[in-house]
Amino acid sequence: MLIRVLPESVAAAIAAGEVVERPASVVKELIENSLDAGARAVEIRVEQGGRSLVEVADNGTGIPPKEVTLAVARYATSKLETVDDLMAITSLGFRGEALASIGAVSRLELVTRASGEQVGTRIVVEAGQIGPVQSIGAAGGTVVRVHDLFYNVPARRKFLKSENTERRRIADLVTRYALAYPNVHFSLVQEGRPSFHSSGRGDRSEVLAAVLGVDSARQMIALPLSDDAPLRVEGYIGEPSVSRANRREMTFFVNGRWIQEASLTAAVGQAYSGLLMVGRHPVVVLLLTIPPEMVDVNVHPAKAEVRFREPDLVFAVVQRIVRSTLLGQSTAPALSLRPGWGGLSESERPGMIQPDWRALGWDGAQPDHHPSVLQTGLPSGGVPLLRAVGQIGASYLVAEGPDGLYLVDQHAAHERILFEQLMESHKRGVLESQILLEPVTVDLSAKDAGLLNEQLDVLRRLGFAVEGFGGRSFRVRSVPSLLSGLDPGQALGAVVAEFEEDETPLLKETEARLAARVCKRASVKAGQVLSLPEQERLLRDLEACRSPRTCPHGRPTMIHLSVEALERQFGRRG
Ligand code: ADP
Ligand code: MG
Image 1 (tube, rainbow, N blue to C red):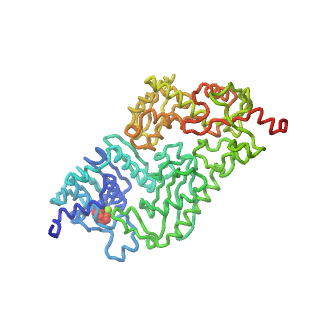
Image 2 (image 1 turned 30 degrees about the vertical axis):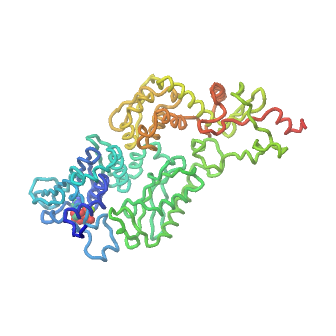
Image 3 (image 1 turned 180 degrees about the vertical axis):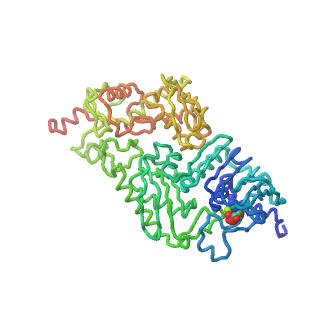
């Protein structure tokens, strides 16, 4: 093929692709423009996950009529003049590319009225073609509407994720900016429904509660005021009990800019080391302030990455502040087993705090070679009738059977019980549900409410009767019988948490498997104190299981010490 210079329209579309990858990138660029324009209110409206419409309206400075055409032209910016300015960027934008890029791959409409102007101005850009400037009545500030994103780039349009995914990304983005800018009122309306808003009153903890939900927000620790010139770190870090299976809940802002930065993720990871199970990640919101000349923001077309002039310093400061705050303030002791340890399930607890049976001489693996080691083999078949004696460490039940002593892992045992009951009812084709005497109203975070709305069908098949009750409130009328022991809000929370871990549970997983995972979450946790009748009940249910001796994941539910082994250990037998 001959080498030739690409037509302007093709070149523009290629360049635009670097800036505008998906609807959320449009939202990001427009929000940044609004913030740069000093807006105190930013209202975002989205239709069809942003494919048919993204609208961002602000009450910022607006654009004077003479400059409107320039604003949508490529490499036209009011935020930068010389190359030297690049060394110390204080605005979010500076590349002068966003509006031009968006206009190259959509039908963009901009309506603006600058302060001091009597009338507003409107301009339309379609697939890069800039239309005439029109006078129009308009409120002070700027509204940008992006219609039919990628309508002229079918390849891009085809690769967009589902509308649900795009909506979630947009909600993630807006809520994060709301956290970073508590003085700005944000509102997000998706498909005509209000999905998030922040008051703009300046109270970051209030925004945090709106983003994470009140319960999770309560488990966030505010970082103390730090003064590690030249770096200031503010924000919130989650107690180890609010860990996640992915890194998406680690949010970093540098000088008001949301960035993805591997070194910051690593610094936080180190700070939590030993406090989280392998494969779990913390929830943090960190806002770094650093002199602009110490950070290069011009390394990524979407401005999503930065380069620190002194990366080691930043790493060390972040790591130290997070670690010391965690160890100093967390209610979770790092290394000791204590009842009520944040209510974590066993698999979520650091391995080091589990009792070391081997050290106690209770490893049955090689009893013959270690005469002093107790025998732990379990009798074959089911389990005999067990009498509850008590509980150790709020995690293990002590029980007496006809042939000795049993130690039962309460979490693993309950998991097994729920799992078998579940499989049984699933085989019968229905997950039985239990109607609540009084419907219960549950308030969720914006994100969880979104997840829940999308999965109402799955919830129904799992045995929940849930309906929207306005905004982020839901009314629960019935819950799956299996989860009827839980508080209805908790039961719903367990299921929604599963939706979050897996964006499309229905596609990847049968309901049975989803429900099995929910059982795991719903089961009695290690660290939960049980009354004697509750212990009895657990043992009865376990006896009724077909495979009572392992949990659904294959770990043992119990350890057996035979009378014989006890006698040998006490020197009563040879
Ligand atoms: P950049 O933000 O990098 O300067 P953009 O293409 O995003 O580039 O915007 C071009 C210019 O248009 C900005 O420099 C600014 O002067 C103006 N502008 C864009 N959006 C707004 C807005 N919401 N309010 C006021 N001015 C705006
Ligand atoms: Mg911009």
